[in-house]
Length: 532
Image (cartoon, rainbow, N blue to C red; front, top):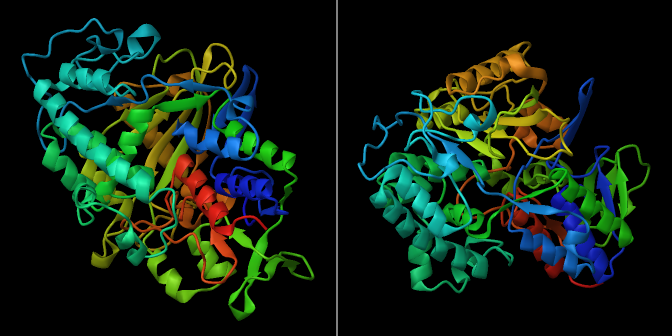
């Protein structure tokens, strides 16, 4: 096993449970891959951060994983359902130029998360007031109850907007059902495999292979802020909603139909649980061990080469939990497979903040800009026309503030702040985040954007720690710091490699990024390999 990310550990556990002897080689000193952690000791106490995912969806996928390997998930992690799953803060106007709704049906509500606030349309800082009290049409809490969520939409944007969302929801349900049944849990090695799947005509119409997520939103949603909410789910795969496939409507369906969950102590406890399960099953996990190549003479794998080792390590099967670009560029050069991996996903710029006091924010908060399209124009640029990628001047800001005493000292909060960013590169398609002064200057800008949107914590900081796309290159081995690998259409790199005995797991391969999809890639590969 090359790599001890979530996909690698999940596959290792499944294969060990089937009877294989499994050794995992991990280049860094810790396991978890992009499910990273950061701990900061301060005079006021210890702050703990997840530096990768902050939300677990489809926990049943992990429950199935632990059950298949002879254990139970709840013996390792303590999951808490979230409501709201995400609190969305919309601007007073959208990129369309439309003002906030003035629908007369929007009357004051008794829901404490929906009370009026300042004239700015954003909640003030401090105490109860920051818990999302905003004028109707500016703040929307998502949840796992579709009727409650539709009622919240109606209260914010009017009954017609809620009816539009319900129509979209029915379409998303059809997409999810077809995807779960025919795509997400089985190997898809080519477009021919995709075409052969048992989709009925109605499924194909729902998935609309040639359509985009943006187009789907425009077809169903008249309220521009709901379109903005839908567009954001393209970023879950690192894509631009104007180009992302309409099938990605399955993502909000999965999140909002099955709920969002938080494990006490942080998402990093999931990596601990997977590592424990692997060790219990006899898996050998070698950290600080870098695989430099795969021996595949004669069209089948024979083993791997390690940095500093004299002889290769023999193996009948090799599973790569690396970015597919790294595999086909460096470990087993394969030009024909490399050709389809040049279009990279967006990256992320992260601030880890120790904050004094209680902001009253939700666990997950999204502060949208006025012009969402300008964000994607900046992140991806247009290299073909000579337009460089650049840091977003007015970005969407995601803020995670876990209400968990295990991750912050009393009277303080541990903030994870994320904005979409261009990947690390010295070309038109990226930004050189190693340029002296750039990261600090951009962190200042992000904090200023939050202040402009009513959330100013600059005078309450105990510390700030930065993570740029360049850092992700080093810590997780992600080329360019691209969080989700390559982007494109419905097809991801196949789970089966070009040499016999070579397989791929992880977010850069089928069925895609995100914790449950990564775990499903491990399930697919373990099924393909089978018992020894």
